[in-house]
Amino acid sequence: MSDSESVEKLQKIMDESSSVVFFGGAGVSTESGIPDFRSTDGLYNQQWRYPPETILSRSFFYAQTAEFYRFYRAKIIVQGAKPNPAHIKLAELEKAGKVKAVITQNIDGLHQAAGSEVVYELHGSILRNYCEHCRAFYSLEDIIQNKGADGIPRCTKTAGCAGVIKPDVVLYEESLNTDVLTKSIEAIRNADTLIIGGTSLAVYPAASLIHYFRGSRLVLVNKGETSADTRADLLIREPIGQVFERIRV
Ligand code: CNA
Image (cartoon, rainbow, N blue to C red; front, side):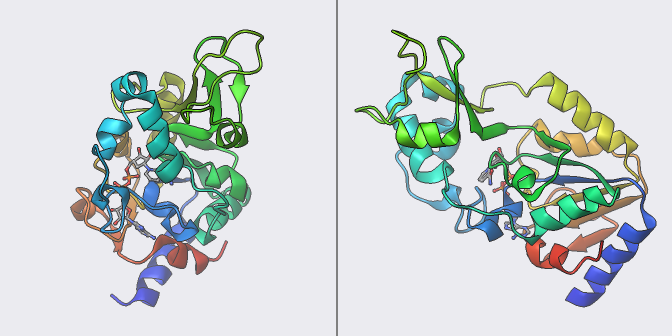
């Protein structure tokens, strides 16, 4: 199937659907300049002292907080990233009543920046950060500015606190938020069309959510292979921003 045939097929599916849910991952934001984990130029293929799964784990955060923040500042925080046509079109489709929810494994806040309102962030967000001691809130900008001598941001809002600030991001070894999980499952169960995009479906339990889908059309828009390829009614291997750019609302 040619590119334009695939996009036309997706358009037809969208037109015939009344309740679309989008389930996505890091590949949705690569066209915004944020590297994913598993592509050839992704973070997993770069040299670092520890593998990303190790650094981004709960035990590592507490054992080697300075090293965690060195990686986090260098690789996870991408300043100036803007929504791409995939984020923007999904927000427009939500306003038009077609897309009911975006469920994302991303932590970059770009779906909300594009205007999507029903966004379930399975892995949290780098935009929210809290003092481990007094729970004071800090923005991403605060984290960027507040480096301390060792790169670790510490609480300055409560007198005498100086607690370590932790991003509201679900690290390896941590559980997903129950409320977000429940709402995501509910949305997927009620969808007539599920579009999975920009995810390797390799991170669990997030990836297992797609098994709650009972609707009639499963669409997969992903550059690389995934375990759900054989189940898809429509499989598109093109960059997701370029695909969604051509969808009419
Ligand atoms: P992943 O495992 O890196 O997989 C990304 C998938 O997207 C791969 O299969 C790629 O082939 C595919 N892909 C890359 N670019 C495109 C594109 N333009 N169009 C279509 N497909 C593309 O990432 P997952 O999200 O599956 O893994 C889950 C991790 C990655 C989550 O815990 C995230 O928090 C984490 N992550 C998030 C971000 C972000 O917030 N932007 C960035 C990097 C990693």
